[in-house]
Amino acid sequence: MKNVFELDVDKLLRILVTTKRYKPPIHRSFFAAKVESGSRWVMFAAGVLYVALLILAGFVYFGASKSEGVKLAGSIVGLLSMLLVLVSLLMTTISSIVSLARAKADFYQDFLEQKSYDMDKSRVVLSVMEPARVYAKRALELKLARVEYRLSSFLGGSDKVALFSLAGMGWAAYKEIGQKGVLFGDIPTAISWIIVGGLAFLFGISLGALVLKNVSDQCRYALELIDLGELLHKLNK
Image 1 (cartoon, rainbow, N blue to C red):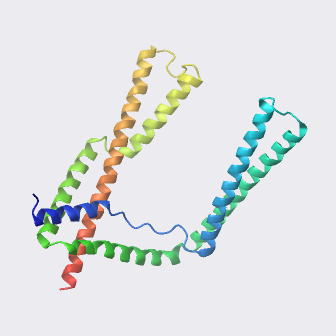
Image 2 (image 1 turned 30 degrees about the vertical axis):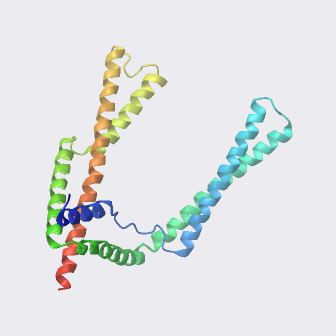
Image 3 (image 1 turned 135 degrees about the vertical axis):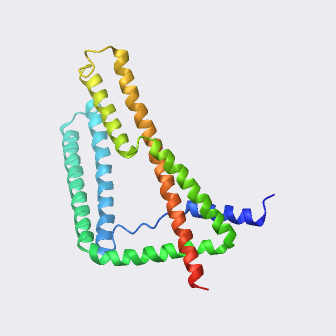
């Protein structure tokens, strides 16, 4: 059975590694937020009209009805759908411009809210005894060191490698399938598939490295919360 010390360590680590960083709202302006919300509804309406267009096109394609009325209705629905998409994009652009214009003023508010959020989350550190805090911090530091060591062995800049390998696989597939083997036309098929498989392998391990990077970021934030909690403890003495 676990003792009180171990239970405190488990409790603290469980809370810290599941606490997410503060994310400021996209729009602080009430007008920009309403316009952004409206643009989503307009895009939803455009999607509904597009589905209606597909249904009408199906009637014509499968021969259920080829009347001029159905074709005219399809044309009108299609035009309305495209128009609503343009309106939605325009509304999104307007809301983004408003938020960008307020960026300097909103930065201070975002900073204050982040401070309050981090302070509130760091108070959980004070809910356990100091030995548990010390042990949890050391455990997180060791975990972070292990993760970063594994990251360094995953081809270094793994996020860029993942993008390049994905682009390489897509280009190879396009050339092999869409262009009838132009890319690897002068080499045996087995070798071409080995090359594509190698690109897929690079992509796979790069995705694994990206997952580890997320773990690393979470460990760093947990350590930041412990440091803030310890600072609150010292200042409140």
